[in-house]
Length: 436
Image 1: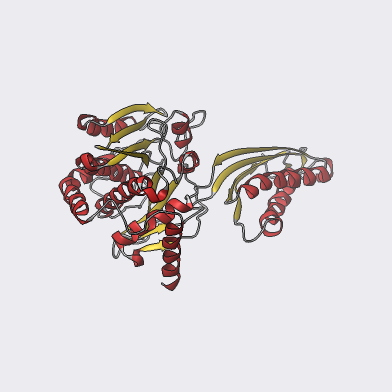
Image 2: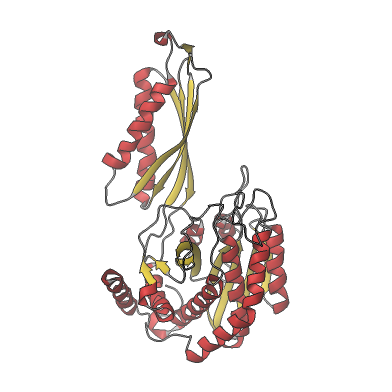
């Protein structure tokens, strides 16, 4: 607990040093009560919407009905709604009644190819497809936040863009998708957002928020290594070049990159997830394919590790007289929380939840394409605990993952306060105007 307190004190001091007033906030007690009243008014509808989305999950770049539902809820209320962004994405703009900066908040909409095993009365109706990563909760919370803040529109000082993004889990083979495409198609440009917010549910205690004022998640890149040997009879290995033996040596040696060639204070993970090769037990394999992922926090490691990998593969295959092919594919960058924005928003979270519920989090080696949004403009990304009392800590992507629905109104409350306070601190004279 002392570590948490020291951390929170440090970020609040940082907020003051950065010129962002920690005490002055747009959400005064009266506004807070209005937010709570609007949440209570909309809570039943939002939970029904969440359950509908959960029952009707759609895979990446196929979120047609989810997007249609969201647009249908927001267009009649006067939001400026664009559909078909990044294939199935929805962008909805809420212009406040008073001048001010522009910010954005993002929810992902896609489900996973997982067969649900929760036994819930509103479980998935689509065989083999499930919201096993909580994106149904994300979409519902952000939609609920839009409804709540729309009721406060006359007093809002600025503009809020609500982004409902497809394909966070990755576009199908041969397609583009996700946050990168939304950025390229101008989702943050009209109006130009000076900050973007996002969150993810996490199987931590209900109501706990986990934040990091810097790297939040890792960059995630992938690779394929093909070892090209020479086939021969298994009883006469001297006549062949055994791709299996060579691949085995490559697997072992690649791990020395993280253990011996990388700074141990700069985390990295190199995982080989698949090995495929050979055709029969008594035939020397002439070809083995290795596939895997690289997770890094720093750009230096992200650039260096693939070079070291290819050097190892090249040298080992040359020793045995084999050939190779090394293919590397850039994936999601690391999600990076703008330190000044994180410092400015931490007092809001502490004020809402109490300091014991706002936890400093170490960077996680999972990946999140929110990183592309946070590269375009300063970002703030946090994790929201959704594990109810007595509930097992079921991991994300599990067929049994089932968030406590009490996290939905809580998430709406958190986002409503964060967004209004973000507009306030950007517009405050002490901050030097819009922009973090």
